[in-house]
Length: 158
Length: 257
Image (cartoon, rainbow over all chains, first blue to last red; front, top):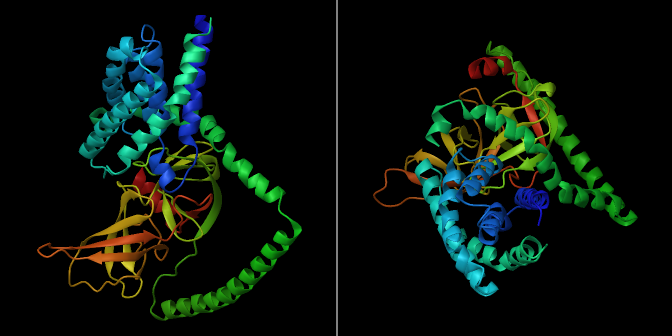
């Protein structure tokens, strides 16, 4: 895949994730919505670890700070720290079955949410830990869509 | 985060990102706009007639209430003049539409389609049809950002409509819940009491509905009771809001600067 196509795909996925993230929802759907920007970040890191690493995750974290209007640096830290796990395990992760990768994403999102809530807690924001398992479960359940996209479009396209 | 709160270096970055993300917010609102358009376009004649009849009835009720309000306002003015008090000026409002919402459940903000060019200013109160929604926290030329009253960093002075008892209503990061802090166990407050803005502090005009007391809990040994409030405004549903231009706008602007 040429670098121009790769970069266009990268920006396309980020834009798509941002738009889905910003869709106005109400009630529990709003609380349970997975962090699509994070899913896209780990997707690129798992399937293109030679190109995109912790620096990339930190930059997307900064972008997430702008999108979520959180204190600048919060998501830089969370994205950077959590993205190191798929980066370290990326060699093995590509050989896992899709079910195993879903379980990995479920665990990763739980760690992500715990770290995010812990930092928000330090900041004085009340945290609701009850929604964490549901968000992680939903992230794991929708991961096959991301997985198919990354394996078919990002890896296999000549 | 420490940098964010202590240094002003990030402010231009946040301002630029606020402008740059506006088209993305616009894109994200497309499904909602399509839904509105479909609802307004594909209404059947019978549905329109039913709605028209309902609106006519509501209009009659509101006009009757308005007549009574006018009478009460005139009476209030006469009494104020008798007491030699200052005359209260009416608030003017500007209709605005929500064009973006914060995607994070921890950060309750909205983006509205009115900015500095429409006279919007920092700290301006925002209402919906049911009650107080929040205040403007960032103003751009064509749009603004508003912090909602349910955000955990927000607090506003309120009073109980029944007896005038004052308190502070705080956000809890839950769209359907707020709380009152430091209420004494002997305080005269009951479930279903209505709370309105008290006007103290000069930020919010007095008398606008804030919420209703949902529950009161007193843990033995605790110094204060825990009072939960349901906000009057439809915080996570309202699309069209009102920006309030209060009679002391100039003072408010000066305080912020």
